[in-house]
Length: 325
Length: 131
Image 1 (cartoon, rainbow over the protein chains, first blue to last red):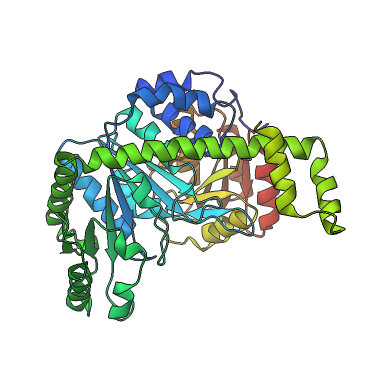
Image 2: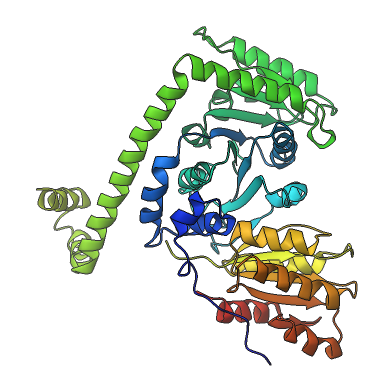
């Protein structure tokens, strides 16, 4: 048996950030891996790419499993390509909480885009994150942005009612629904129905599509505060490419709207703020955790708490007082 | 965050049977791998490009049609041309013993034929991917 063909070590042969900025697709791919694994190179890569971000339009695509998010993304991406825009797609599927493995199957609906050089598709597992994205989705978006993609689709896992992290990552959020999933009370519950900038009713040739459109419209009209932007509800049949152009027109309209009245700037400011606080929180958290694990104090605390000599609140208070002095 | 092993499970060529590929995909998932599955009837070009975009550690191909002497080496060459010299490439399916030496010569690291235990595939990948 011949030895397996294994040559250069990952990443060692190229300056990943530099190559990403030069438009090297393999470098972009390896940068995203680095980011996902939070390996030792990832912070350096992000620092180098960050100044080149902020140009792409980020479109969130969310909705329940089987709503047609991938199929619709595929059709919309083709339409944007016809208009000469370059496209990035990040498609997220769930990671098993038991094995840590995942089946990432969104590409099945997008195989026709694989050989288009202006499209880059990356599948990601949620890796324990519960909000419909993975922890590192936002950074992967930035890598594609720095690479020069004009529009970046972020397709969430199939969501239920409360996975709304996508609003933090996207400029415009599109909620994709299909008929036959429940009565009109479902439409007025809190959660994903509150986050849509544009609503899409896919599989509009199925029974109940018009009723669903009516219910979403009713829900939107109950919104007490009159806002400048009333989310439109568009019917599409994604697998037949029907209604896709009209949908894109609405999305463009929303993007123009948030650009022209300062909402986009506001959202991005908020995002930057959250970003700093997130990184700060996680760095401080892992710093302190590492310290008390390394010096064996964690086990001592556990013993003391078990013997009811102290309690977790006192212990945490003391640790914080000491470390953050 | 620990590094996860990412595997592309691909069906090159025109046969329409992917039960085997799905069984393998599921077994790899249960072993904690991230499995990118691209569906039926993929060209070598599509497989190689998907491997690049997904930055997989391993490409696992399944084929039942008999086109493996042509398609497996084509994928190996395209993957290598894209600069992914470190990606492990394996194959499986209905493949006659006599064809195996030539496939290995062409750069397919291992061939798994019917009757292989899924755990053998998992162990092989774990042992041979570049960490």
